[in-house]
Image (cartoon, rainbow, N blue to C red; front, side):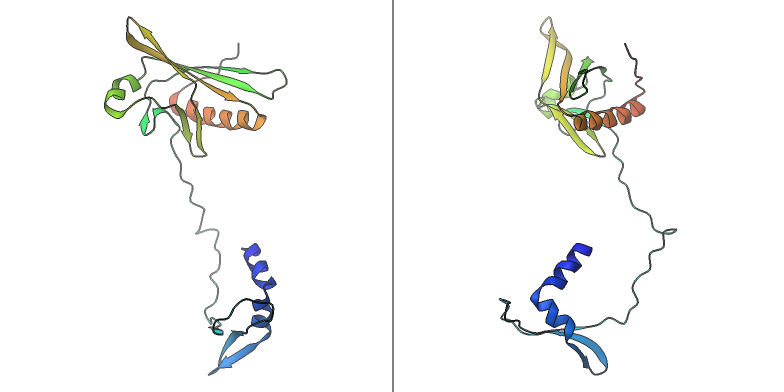
Length: 181
């Protein structure tokens, strides 16, 4: 808001706009005039000053609205995976990059993929947005799908932190525990 106001005050029109108070039938107003520096060739603008007092902020009654999204994993966009994965994390010694390997045994996506469509990637969704990877491999036993392995690679500490926030939400929602080996 402050940026918009400072830009408005910096324009050639606003200088003449602010320096020319007028009164029409007792109601104060401001008139904008054409400036030599302006490309504006239209009519003058008259804006009556509002007599309504500004709305006061009451922090007790108003609070920000936060939309919470249940953390979920999808292989087909719009279709949530119901199987809870086994997740393995690796991180470089210097902490600059890492990898998460998700293993799903008998994932539910195999049940719905013929009806909904093909597996298009690996999507981790929460209230911050979507983390995605295309490194997805299916495991087949006797010609039938048996599992999926998906890898998510984090190349910066920021990506690592974002992934860990997702995993904290996902594990709380699905009853996963972290075991350090």
